[in-house]
Amino acid sequence: MMAYPPAATLGAWGNDDIVLYHGTLAQHVSNILRQVSLAYARPFKDFGPGFYTTTIQRQAEAWAWQLSAQTPGATAAVVSFQVKRDQLASLDALWFVRGAADADDFWRFIFHCRSGMPDHGRSVTGGVRQKWYDIVVGPVAGFWRQRV
Image (cartoon, rainbow, N blue to C red):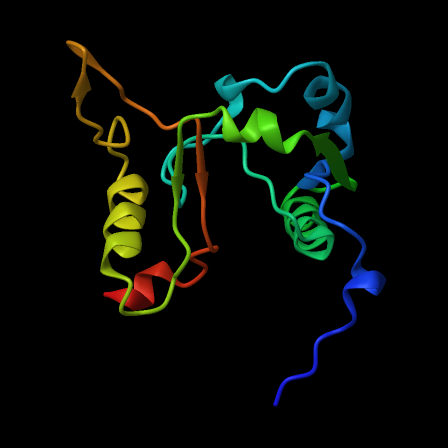
């Protein structure tokens, strides 16, 4: 039998803000804080070109460290954002809960994006092609080539 902490120790649900972290280089922090620009987004990423964040601070720190190791003289940095959940809920979102080897829908999407496709492959709505989701949420596909 699994024991859960008493509800009183958790506190009541309040739809609190969520904190998102972005690993980067110190030289980019002021620009990111001023305005996130997708002009700097790189193609061939898990969910396509975009601005990637995580809810795990240590993961963002690891990404920042990797970037700094690839850029001589650069300093790793992590930017945090406090975001209202209601604002996230208003976005056009695609969610992947599972990234296991047998989660074929997740892996098809990863291969679609990593092969440089020009959009998320969305359908036409009201006569207008909706190219991209505003936000895609899911696990990191670190070893995506091994999925083959």
